[in-house]
Length: 145
Image (cartoon, rainbow, N blue to C red; front, side):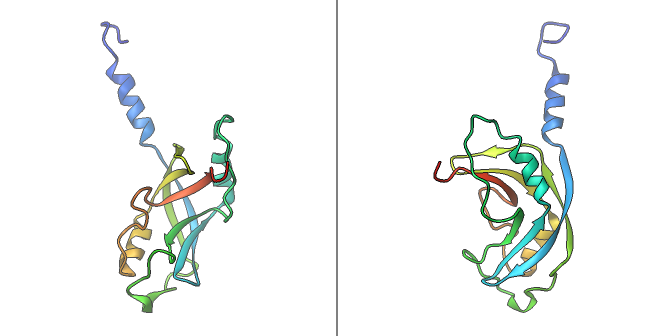
């Protein structure tokens, strides 16, 4: 409560600002068979956030190394195939937030990256493959728990 007996708007403002903080990191873009492309990232990033998962939540470490999926060939195929591989090996900066998101199956952190959006658009795809989570880093999963 504020000095006048009402809820402090300053506290609410600080909370909103805290939830908007984004950190910056980099990854390396790679292309794979089957129209799959990912931004490989430092494994330590996902490991740090795995250590933040409350001990009361059971989880598994993901099967794949830490990455941000750019094109998920199992579910989509680029329209402009002639530019596939154009940015192989590029180092790309991305932003991520600090809040773990948890649902029945996955634990992840949200990612924003205009460059990955533009690469997808150049390939003739929409700006993000996952309409539910957007670009993200899967920190853990809760499959078969």
